[in-house]
Image (cartoon, rainbow, N blue to C red; front, side):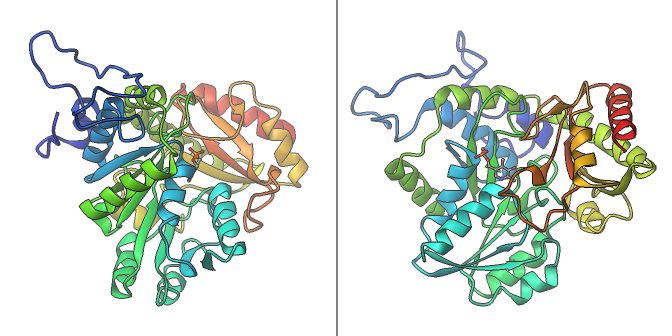
Length: 372
Ligand SMILES: *Cc1c(COP(=O)(O)O)cnc(C)c1O
């Protein structure tokens, strides 16, 4: 089914990318597990494409307003954005970001492939000032895990003034909360492992662009490098995408209520959530987003060991990395040696799920009080 510009994004999440309606045709896209295809058609081999990719890509492209390409993981999608850069190209990015992204650009810089410039996330002026000479500006819509909000209209204006490409990792917010291409981004990257698929049962990534030439080059690169998505994972992700709107409704409402209650908790010294009126990212999120996301980061009173105890004292919240599933998870990000030093060592990142709010609060409250 084609893009449906007259339908709301919430409806497109359900309706886009379905097989054409004809008598006897399936409503849902089947998973196509085939490495090769009969000759003389559009597809020859499984690295060229797959009908299950097409279904997922049509749905995600409809939500983001561009052409989507599925990749094996969010990391593979990010690498597809970095890989075509000319040798020695300047990449402007943030000091804090997803630790895997930090490691990836660090490795490319150490190998002399790119030159890195880093500014504090959320400091739009510093980002704009550092843009001249950059080939690529790479930011996260909402920074992982410190939750600063990127000012995409300002960053895209600066990038385009100086001939740079703006790539936005929008994993934390999804197109139902913010559409980066509408705000001037050239490329959107998703770890579909997280909210888009929503059930913590697969890894998948995607890149979305409005530029047909970029889309063609990305498809060629995916084919040639081989970091392709598994059809089964793609099918599961599309199944998850169908319920994105209702999952986000609940998880965002839960996150907003938890953030409000956590602000008053004696064991919590700081709550980061763009939905709070005094949060540094509130003004931009209120302007550019249609919600405030489902991620909440807190800093706990006491030392990192006390923060660590919280993560081992919950019964309902799972102590686990990753995010964006229907189930609530939390972790102390600095437990990972690879986490950027700019992340406070008592910071707990909460991925708020769709459980009953009172059950979530009761468990978190007892874990925080017991560990303080
Ligand atoms: C998880 C994550 C990634 C990496 O995605 P994978 O699917 O794990 O490779 C990239 N960016 C952000 C913001 C993430 O949270």
